[in-house]
Amino acid sequence: MTTEIDICNKTILRLGGNMVSTVSGLVVDLTPDSLEAKLCLLNYALVRDIVTEDRVWSFALSKVVLDTPDIIKPVFGFDNRFPKPTDALNIWRVHYDNFNSPWVAGMSEVLEDWRVEGAFILANAGIINVEYVRRMDQVGDIDLFTSQFIDSFSLRLAVEFAIPLTENEKLFASLAGEYEKRKTDAYAINGSQAKHESFRSTELTRVR
Image (cartoon, rainbow, N blue to C red; front, side, top):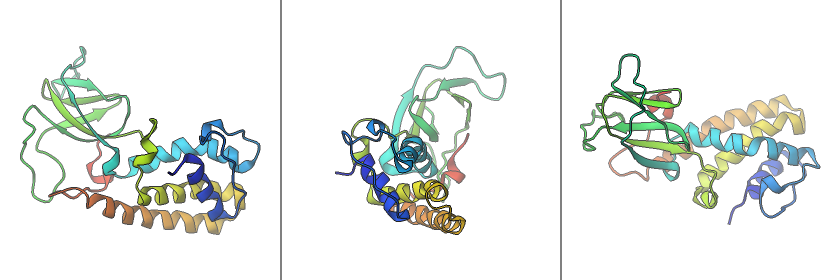
């Protein structure tokens, strides 16, 4: 079973640093008595969210039906606004009451108008069906991580750790480039788990 410590140590070993000790198996329980431990404590949760948000990972997808619009209406452009799920990193798709909405050939967006503004989802319906990428910070969530995600996560942590641990700017640049390629490869593999639909980069599907 992979732990937060395992992921941090995988990162540290990649950079030739000193591994951190496991204390109750949780990063939050580490005593930051070394640079490596401090880097883990400072970066783990943030980088986990970055890597999760960066792609539409199938294990992080969640669905919810929102049927209570906010009492305050949008000033213009949409009929209603709904509070985003509190655990949402980004909103992927929004369907209206009829979940079987038509699809545009080759596209991953339904033919329904919506937008994310701040903490709200704006839409022209009283009930919306929302698919979103959630924050993976609950007990047991780490067990859902795929090997490809863990590898991408560890590599992205290495980008953050590289300068503080090695002071090597060339290594930093090399790791950053490797991460960009790796996350694309990992995403393609993860996306193949969906039937009759290809997951696409959130750069194309995400609306902020």
